[in-house]
Amino acid sequence: MEFGAARGRSRPIRAKVLGKFVYFSKGISVAANRRSSRRSSGTSRKPRTLARGKRSDASIQRVLILLILAIVVGIIIGFALPHVNDDAARLTGRYTATGTAAETLEKLPVQDGGAVEGYDRELFGYRTTDDDGNGCDVRDDVLARDMTNVVFTKRGSCKVKSGDLQDPYTGQLIHFKRGKTTSSAVQIDHVVALENAWRSGASEWDASKRLQFGNDMYNLLAVDGPANQDKGSKSAAYWLPTNGEYRCDYVARQIGVKDKYGLSVTTPEKRAMLSILHGCPGQSIPADQ
Figure: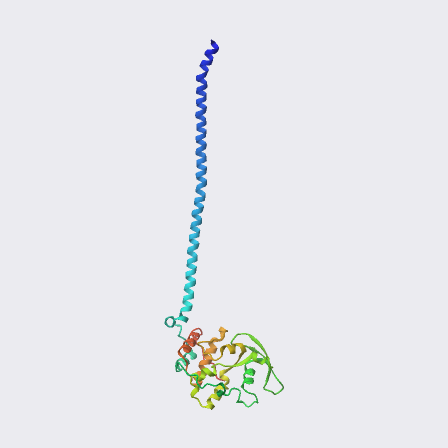
């Protein structure tokens, strides 16, 4: 009897203990779930923050790239537009210049559409005179004038055997040596080309004036052969030396030659000359020596 009563009394006790254990287990489980939830929510916020930061950095980079592109495009347009559009060039002062070269250019007559009919290089008699009476034609005279370390074919001769030319058109140093296959490395250029002169008024000259023009050392330069061939009879509107440092002197000499002989310029030629002279304020006309 006592044993049965003891068993009967133990059931409520076990139920209470079991209930407390279940409650305690549930509490642990809920607490664990809350901690897990916090950890998971904390880890999920970090990627979102990083993603937002990356998107922000990407936006800033895009804005900077667009700004740089806008600046580059602005510089290109500002530099190129005056060369492409005549009105823009006038507005930006591209055709304004100072110095005796620009002043002389303004005095030259402007004539477009000069005819080439009747032109013949031989009419100018290049290398057919000996104005200084030294026994050599003008090619050797120009070589001796424009080169350094000049060696003549023999003592007392005016014929140039070799020398060094600091080429004004390309800026390169050329070692000249007289010979059938080497002489053409250095050629003599008519700064105002003979055909250009013909179109600009020389077609109206008499034979004597053409002969003078064709052999005038003021209009002749020793230059790089290929550069001379590339120039041909082009005016400043269509050809300029690749050596940018010489362009001002080149254009100024052309103006001086045209002024000396009363030759005209075309509208594109004058604009090209003014555009060059704009970059060298105070440019003077080379002396005629």
